[in-house]
Image (cartoon, rainbow, N blue to C red; front, side):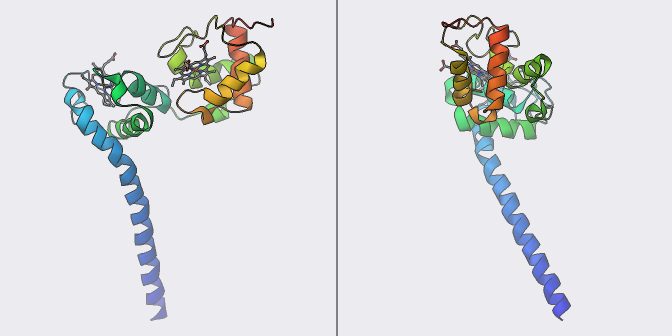
Length: 195
Ligand code: HEC
Ligand code: HEC
């Protein structure tokens, strides 16, 4: 009897646990799904195969999840990009990535060994280029090349640490900010006024 009781309790526990896990998952997806149906589906279709837009099912255009967020944040919905920004853009990006099976390489930022020039380049290309372009000339964001915004190296580090990547600055902190700053200073001809 005791044996059955413990099996029963264990099963109830597991069912309860998985319910909590899945219902959280569903909640997170809900916002994205709602936004998608209201503001995106007319053009992109229920299945992502496109109505007034090209199909994006299994899109391999994006280098990272940030890229999906940035695209939605800055240029979608195509007719009124200000309509879906910030956390809403993040939610609907997550929904699109899962629902339409975007092929996004695993986030490797943390694994990048940025201690040499190659590593710093990889870091910039993976974390910053989606908005600034690999050449720093600006794609979705302002150009970095020839920037006159900073006085000294440490200001560049501080700026990146506090504000970049634009929608998720926590993604590049401390050593990452130093390495990213070093990369752009060496490669994009920043006009530091104390040089
Ligand atoms: C008025 C029509 C329209 C609406 C509404 C719209 N889009 Fe788009 N979307 C487009 C067009 C057109 C493109 C192709 C643009 C390009 O490739 O330059 C596109 C491209 C995209 C892409 C890139 C797909 C790829 O693989 O190239 C994504 C992701 C996307 N839209 C998401 C969204 C989301 C999310 C919303 C709602 C918040 C939305 N769109 C609303 C027209 C629309
Ligand atoms: C999601 C898009 C996005 C990503 C990713 C991003 N940035 Fe930015 N960046 C911006 C925007 C938008 C601005 C303009 C901010 C402003 O002026 O308020 C900007 C401004 C800058 C500037 C100042 C340029 C100038 O002279 O005005 C620098 C430097 C910079 N970013 C570095 C970086 C670095 C380094 C990374 C990667 C760690 C990064 N950014 C990632 C969007 C982005």
